[in-house]
Length: 523
Image: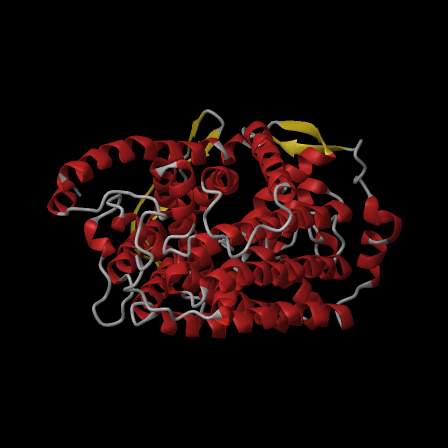
């Protein structure tokens, strides 16, 4: 690392208002409004919507609160997108959120975001979605399995550190994570061949998975309604355990059980729903390649998040119309297990099986594979632009700032991201890492929106083609709600918070080690 940095002479970090407007002139403007919107939607829709409602249902034990958890997520997501639209229109630069944090709060905060994105958020998500692809591919080809080892290196024993349970991962190459690795490699290589090529694939798979979700909703309305489920979940039963004075059982970090209020349990439930709706901000990473970004970025953020959140909420109503929310883990039938204890938490698969019999599970497996493939492509395409922007600032390997001479894509950045993602795939650690980062993700969203307030004060003269809807009230509400969720998670789900916080904080010494090297190199 030191050799690579010392040979370079990275430019000093300067404000975007001091840079030439053609900073990203070498990038190809290949993303129109349709492609940008598809990138928002495609990055959001992974496997989460098909699974996490089971865990949320176990936590809230109320049909109204299941929908409420998704409504809270929807509000935060759409308000966040509307707020980011102002920053995106103001600074349409490759790197997106990294640039906003750098310009509003300083380069350290931008680096910490990029560091966490590379180490865990982006690469860990790609690994998890890729392995989920392999898992569902195994339904059709049983040889693809997490137990079919090609090279098993070792098993990391379980151990506890404070409130955290760590370890328990199998390290090595099996046929399931091999499928994930092949997906990551293929999509990373394809994305070298121009942003339009990556966008073409994204548009196809996003269209397919939006159609799959819409199909689930339509089939659910006309074919999926079950009298037993409707009686159990709707009418007076819909509001069961949803009063503000109700108490809910939540397991603490070490398995201890505590009783919490309705507002608190809704905050706890956000771990799953927020993660399922995350990555909407990825389109900002590609801002340097978006046509007419001052118009198209805010529009794509608003339309993309709005459509996906509407589909997510509709899907959960379909789940409630097809299966009882409350069930038993020992239940012999789909209706007896309910949403809470759907096999392996595959709620959507259970609903489709309820509608179409055994063939429903196969249909849902295909839908999830399509969803995962498209999600991986969106995350791979966009994530590489952040490391490219960091390298341009001298805060990542110098070579990552190079573009492919013919296709003008950040080819080396794509390859570096690919290699680390593949390491996570065989390490078996990505699942734990992802559990840990939702707290950190929310912190960075809060900091970025705080940055909007800072920029309104420090750069009132800056051109703002679009201004955040509802400013300052809606962004302020977002900050208060997100901080409340983080505080609740810190208190009641420490296993999801402290590791993510530690990963972020580890970036501070890395930043101060790297910065003097880049400074000395440029002197």
